[in-house]
Length: 374
Figure 1 (cartoon, one colour):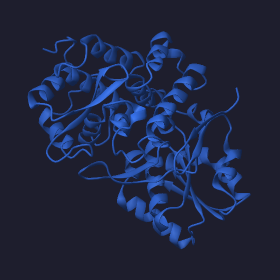
Figure 2: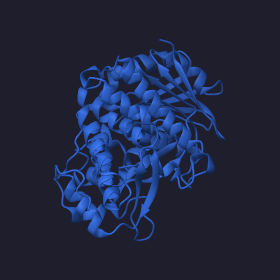
Figure 3: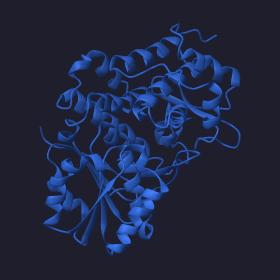
């Protein structure tokens, strides 16, 4: 199958390429002026990244920097170590960064590129479904602090994104499934065809080489592109997105509770798993606020569970999670804000829901009685 090129417009346009064996396209994305390239990769992927490094050595001076795995990469000390290495290697404003790894590697590498000399070129080569549909597209970069996830960051568009589907064949099944959490989220907020595809496909057939998996990934990327080009810096909706649309904030559907779950479990729960739980939570919350039909709450549970994602959570108290949610980036003052649905692909902001509804929605995560939204 041919490569799919998805164009991201705006002030700094770039392409997202989906296909196989894409490393040869990297030099064109990096540009002719680049002399040095820093490859920031997840440390556990040292063997997998080597062919890419070898191909770059033919054209550039290459600095390969292995990072801690997962969320442990997304800290200020790790970023500082990268800055130190770039400085010692003489990286200038005309040089570039390439990230190679999952969402955490992409977030950290993008942040290093955004902050080194106030911004150098970066090309993302995501190696997970999550990285392809979420972290690599849209220009958000970030690191975590003890107070919460992604509280420090910058907007910095990549020069390009190479989604090499050959790489996800190396993923453990649990990692591929976790990435589908973000994909299914896109189905609820914008593209219900995603839900139809998941519901009509045997979950065992959602493999790295499945054409359905590729279509799901491409559809999720398109959802993100459509939102980002209208509201790059998450300032609010636009006329093109529809009246009352939350703008880029819609991509945070399910994320308020998801980030709290990740934080309180010290990131033992994968991001996509937490998003699945968080999405069921906001569906329950919207039902209690009177805006979402209980049948659609049922569908949330069913679709996420169909691919093997969790839809329940009882490993932290409501009080602990509530405390973490209060420092979520989407909060305004003391008021919690949630992206909720009025119907499929009809998102809006629910600001300041009652604690009664917040508690009831959390209790419902472990209650099989869907639709008890009185």
